[in-house]
Amino acid sequence: MKTFVYLGSELAAYNFGQTHPFGPARHDFFAEQFRTLKIDRDVDVLAPVTGSDEQLLLFHTEEYLNRVKKASLSGEGFLDCGDTPAFKGVFEIARTVVGTTVNGIERIMQGEYKRGFTPIGGLHHARRDSAAGFCVFNDCGVAIERLKIEYGLQRIAYIDIDAHHGDGVYYSFNHDPVVIFADIHEDGRYLYPGTGNDSETGDGAAKGTKLNIPMPMYSDDEAFVLAWDKVERFLEEMRPEFILFQCGADSISGDPITHMEYSTESHAYAASRLCRIADKYSQGRIMAMGGGGYNLENIANTWCAVLDSFIKHER
Image 1 (cartoon, rainbow, N blue to C red):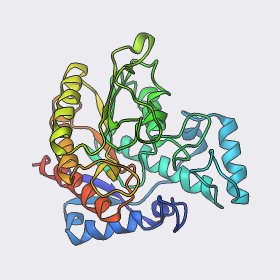
Image 2 (image 1 turned 90 degrees about the horizontal axis):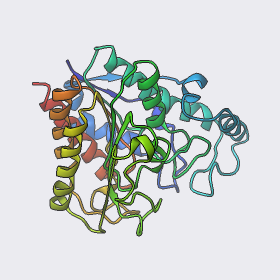
Image 3 (image 1 turned 30 degrees about the vertical axis):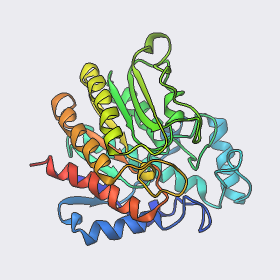
Image 4 (image 1 turned 120 degrees about the vertical axis):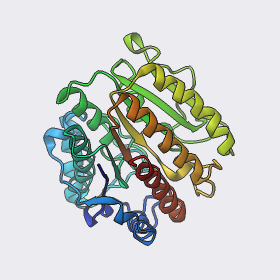
């Protein structure tokens, strides 16, 4: 059962221009390395899928959708306080990011594949009623709602190793015991969005279903493995039925807007260990999303390392 990867100009179109950190070269730089390393021989390459308003409304408010539609027509202004500019067609393009991630989880749930990856996804900062941090729509949040509503899953794991805390996911589901949340991120005292303290473990009925691990600046692979051991023990206790994996490459040494010093080995290690957990508890089911990353070589090498881990665990 092969791993699948989404590639296509429809995903590459999700960017905010040449001068923005989330620029137009991210998708294509990864795709070139993906083919150079001949990973395309070992996976199925799928085309992006257009999402629907109905999918977006599983997570986002109708008022917010209408605001993005209006900004998409004019292409002017910002969708948040200044990080996420509007551009013409942004609604349709961002909706395709969501549709692609949702299509991935559906293919996995229908038994066509066990694992998949989309490079342009994992937009974990968007809230239900607003954009944030380069994220227009939260494909992670929509995917979680889809898994709950359509498939009735009761233990959905969201694992995030992007340098930035996945605040849009955490605070949208902090009262929801169905969502098992584990996030290793740079300490919010030093990096946007400034959240994700280790005391944040969920609220109400969800208390104890969330794990936040803030890391000191300049943390390396050794520190990551120690933190990952906590994640793994947490997941063993929670026994997830499906794993969503946000594998942002901005935690790799050399990223221009973060301060972490992992190598690609950390992401490969996490991917490999998640495969083991997924095979044990989740029928192998993992949907990975590229998340952040603003050093092009890091993006290409890290995401390819994640895919290599997935491929090795097919055998």
